[in-house]
Length: 103
Image 1 (cartoon, rainbow, N blue to C red):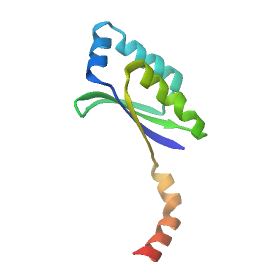
Image 2: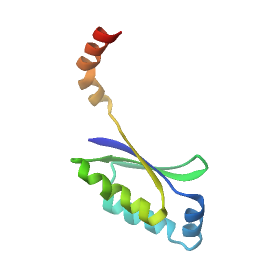
Image 3: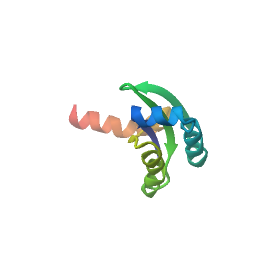
């Protein structure tokens, strides 16, 4: 299942890692291990924030994706199920059923 993973790096820890030269090395090491479908880097809530698109075959994979960020940066991590257009198209019968029943 595809998830959108939002990782917010605390300012103090990210600044310290930037100053000692380890920020990009740590991020690259994590990304090499996790192999996300996509990775974007932006500012959110005043913090450096990687956004990853990842696929899980089983919920037991969640710690393997979250723990490196927790441990390397003391980051906060959120994971949200996400669909692509073809997933949404497959869901159309269920959406129509809900509309018919609840709208």
